[in-house]
Length: 225
Image 1 (cartoon, rainbow, N blue to C red):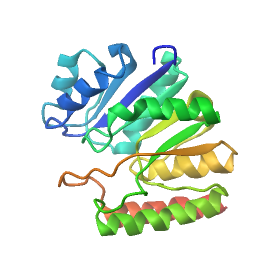
Image 2 (cartoon, rainbow, N blue to C red):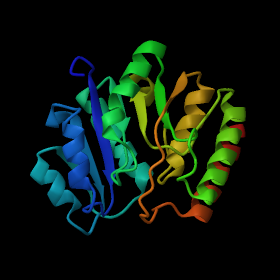
Image 3 (tube, one colour):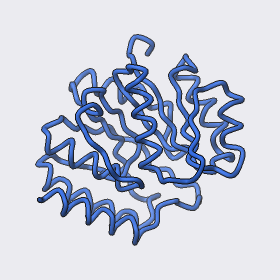
Image 4 (cartoon, rainbow, N blue to C red):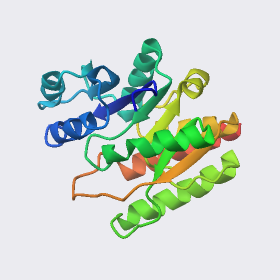
């Protein structure tokens, strides 16, 4: 693990209930605290305090700007630190840090610039509306990028430095992940997938369906022109 020059990025918003457990589990895989960044996107709870107590790197937005802005902040930090790869996972324990080695192994084998955790093999635990929106957006993105997109809405991803340096990302919220997929595909970057489990613990999603679907549609049609 240590020979791969990568960092782990955790965008977090009011994540005090899950962040400590997540960081403990990340530490079992990633041995250096200097390779872990928590971006506190305007939390009003103890999210930032927990990150400080664990001794990881952290950045703070004074107000909530959205996941896309948190990711852009993290990508800039990672480029300044000269990491070769950036792995992103959510703070709500829906992504298993124990699976990080699978992403690194896939990238080494396929030489991909973007490796995404696909939850679409077992859908019994995914809410019906999420299945429908994911299948629709994944189908549209597959058509647009001319690459098979299995799970367009997964935030469990490994990005290459080369990819992040080439893409000009402008979105502020969850649609940034779709924007990144479209631009990566249109510029010919190789996208691959690894199977990961679907985990929902009854937590309230921060995704606002109507708003985020509308933003996806705007990004998709903008890419056509």
